[in-house]
Picture 1 (cartoon, rainbow, N blue to C red):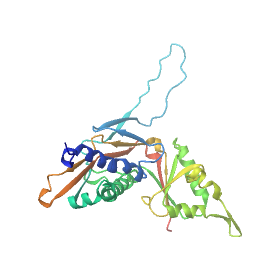
Picture 2 (picture 1 turned 90 degrees about the horizontal axis):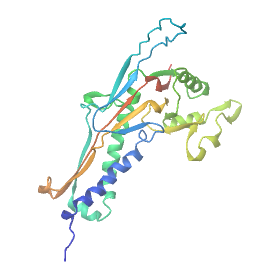
Picture 3 (picture 1 turned 90 degrees about the vertical axis):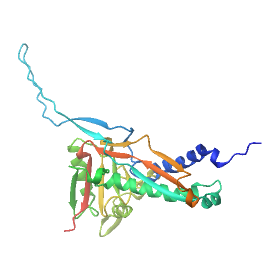
Picture 4 (picture 1 turned 30 degrees about the horizontal axis):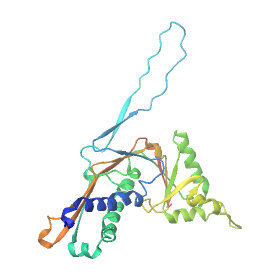
Amino acid sequence: MSIAVPSGNASAINDALAQAVIGPLQEKSTFLSLPGIHIIDTAAPLRLPLSAATSPNAAFTAPGATIAQQTVALTEKVLLPTERVGLKSLTVVSNELVRMAQLNIESVLTQRIVEDQALVLDAALWNGAGTSDSITGVLAASGISTSSSADLLTDPDVLIDALAAMAEEFVTPSVLVMRPTTFAALRKIKVSSSDSRYVFDPSQAFVAGAQQLFNLPVVTTTAVPANAIAVLDTSFIYVGRDIDSSTVVLDQTFGDSDSIGIRSVSRYDVVVTRAAAVNLLTVDAG
């Protein structure tokens, strides 16, 4: 009779851990679940060609006349360049703890591995400074629009003007991102000091279980600064996800302490192809 033992079923253990780390990572990351962003699986650098802004010079031309030449300049942005560093973690767990967990290994490992990686990744995709070849987040990207107003959380006109300004730049706002407290402050705006009706219909703030304002979905996250609103056109946001991301159980490396190691490696990057697609509104402290 053949007895199945853990050492002969390493692939089953790896699969279980991969589901615990890779699967919930996207669910816990608000950035990766933004509506409309492009997520591309690639391990190699991906070049995104862009046409530079030029003034159209096509002209009505008489028969037989020389047609005016038009110059179109091209630029590019690189997603996941070779120097982009990966997101890595190593967690050491004693075999006693693994045995105590029995089949419910996720209850032992998910909290540490998934939550830590999700928080680090989310923070980087939103606000990464790009230092030491790490991710530059969309709110730290070069050239994005920023503005401030003392009335941001008291007068809806400020947000309406921001949406109109983005439309003038030929981008279409698709999502509003803010902290839960900021969303609450906007929803509490009253008609006037003598009229306690809400400006925003409370029944419309959670249509079909989703948060929204001005018919745009609202994503709440603490990655956005306090008392600020990020307005995004996510069609210009590209995320690169290294398909070689892996989770490996190291069952020999820490043998001297009767422990196993769980090494998790992921590699992501993000670029905004048009800076006008990101507008960060803040409250003017005055």
